[in-house]
Length: 500
Image (cartoon, rainbow, N blue to C red; front, side, top):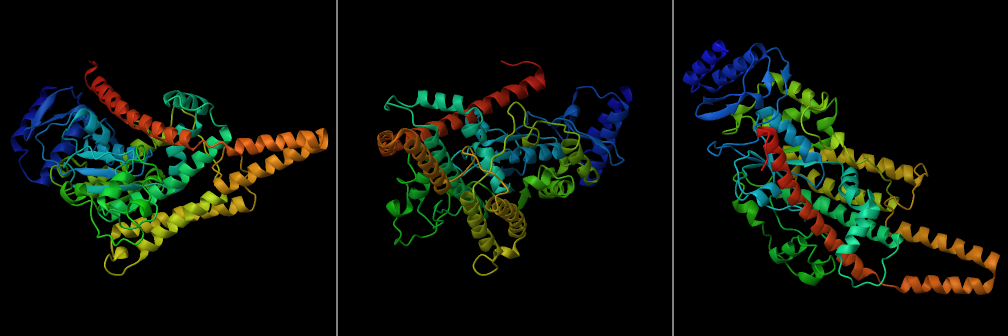
C-alpha cells in the first residue's frame, strides 16, 4: 500500500500535463489496482475527487473489469452534457449503462431532476416530448443522442405492464380510482377495443417523437404531422386533460389555417448544441453480439473530445471489452435485456395494425431519405443511420404482416387486433351464437337474445374510457416520480450502506 500511495502522490503533482499523458497515468494507476489492493480512498487529481472502486479498470492488455459508476457527481466539473432521448421503453437504460461504464460517471433521468432537484450528472435520459416525458433538467444539456428501437417491440413494451400483465389488478385498481359515475364496468371486449385504439395512437406518437428531435424541436401535430401552433402543441402533450378529439388539429387550428413554423423554446434556449441528435443509436444493435461493439463505439465517439467528459473516457483499446462486460457477462444494472420479476410476454398484431406501422415507417423513410432543399436530410449522417434502422424495422414488420395474411400466425382476442378486425370477429361470434340459439331453442329465444345484444351495443362507455385513460396516465406519471425517489434511495444505499 505504501508504494501505491507514493504513486498517487506523484500523479497528483504531474496530472496537469497533456491529455495523452493523463490517460497513460490513469491506465497505469488502474493497472496497478490489479496488482495492489486498492483501498476505498478518495484522492485528488486536478482538484477532482475519484473513488477508485467506481472506475472501470483497464488492465493494459486489452482486458478490463467493469466497476459501478460514481453516483454522487461533484458540482464543480464543467461537463459537456449529453441528453439521451427515446420513445418510452427500456432501451435508453442500456445506452445509459454503456456510457456510465465508458466514463465512470452516472446518468440521471428527467423525473429525477424534476422530483429531486438539479445536479451535475453528465448524462440525462428523457422521453420528452412524449406525454410521459418532462423537460426536467433546465438548461443543463449540450448535445443529444437519440435511441431508436423497433416500433413493434416498442408498442409491446410500452403497453405490456399497463394493459395485459396483471390485467385484473390493473383493471380493478383503475376502476376504483375513477369517480363512481358508472353503473357497471364495461365488458372485457370493450376494454380490448379501447386498448387497441391506444396502440394505434401510439404509432403516431412514435413517428412524431422522431420528427421532433430530428427537426430540432419543430412543432407539429401528432396525427396529421402538420406544422402547428404552440398553443395546440401544448394541448397535445396533455392527454390526461384533453382527449384526442378535443385537441384535434381541425378543431383547434383549422385545416385551412396557414401556420408559421415555430420551435419548442426548450430546444431554442436550453441545449447549447441544439436538439438535433449528433448520433442515432439502435437499441437492438447495441445488444447484438455482432453489431454491439460497433454501436458502443458510436457512443464513445460521441463523448470523445467533449469538454469535461473526454478526460474520463476510458482508453479506446478497451471500449469493446467494456461492451462485453455489460452485454456478454451481464455486469451492471438490469435492463430490458434481462427483465426480472415480470414474465416477458409477446403479442401478435393483426394485419390492420401492422399496416398502420408500415404506413408510419414509410412516411419517415420517405422524409429522411430525401436530399432536397431546404433540409437535405440524406446528406446528414444521423439521417442515414435512421433510415438504415427504419428499413430494417419495416422489413421485420412486413415479414410479420405477410405471415399473418397467410395464416401463419393465429390471432387470439387478447392480441392487438385493431377496430376492424375485432369488430369482424365479434360479429362472426355473435352470428354463430344466434344461429345456435335459433337451432336449439327456437325463434322466441333467438328474438330475446338478439334484443339483448342490440341493447348492450347501444350502451355508450366512452365517458368511462376517457376517465380510465386519464387516470392510467396520471398513475404512470406518478410511478415515474416514485421510481426516481426509489432510485436515489438505492444509490445512496449502494454508496454508503445507509439510507435515511
